[in-house]
Image 1 (cartoon, rainbow, N blue to C red):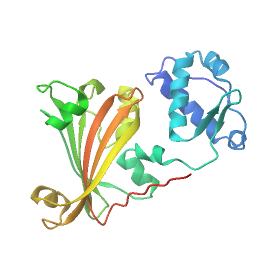
Image 2: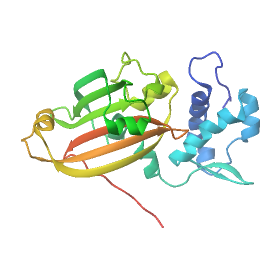
Image 3: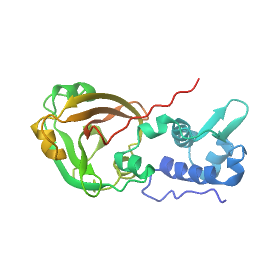
Image 4: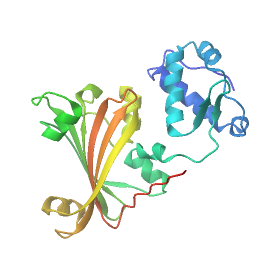
Length: 242
């Protein structure tokens, strides 16, 4: 294939480089173990810095699609997609991987004064407003999750974006913000009146509470997300190897 990117495109160079690398990864030769193009040479061909190219490579390494070895080079990973990769996917992308069609029952975007937990996570001043997005989502016939996401002001969201798009795709393509790390906490609780109303379940029904802290490539906080799931609609799987 011809190695090239469009330097006049509004799409960031590192994102274009990533797209190119994903195309290479899909090629049979690289799937069969062929070493990926040399980093120095590819950067020259694309007329981008090694730092920009490395940003794209590092993301794919983090996803478990590529492996790098000193004095050998970069190759396509032969193992399946790692749990790390799925961990920071948006909800839409998670459900798409599972073949589930998702419907938005509610979508609200507002500017709010954040609570103490959000302030501490973002390390912002208490009087700084943040963008909050609330969504009720589920299968075509019933909702099963209520989300509330808070975004760091640094991200640059205005509230006018099309939030029906996959969230992390939107952040990357429109704001050059790439989500690469997600830390999560999951616990069980009973639904209060607010959550029960959103999920159309009796008050006191069992639900799973999922708290997600999302960071960019520089490990800077970009999103604070909380989700309330019907207990019978969410299974969290962890795979470990030794």
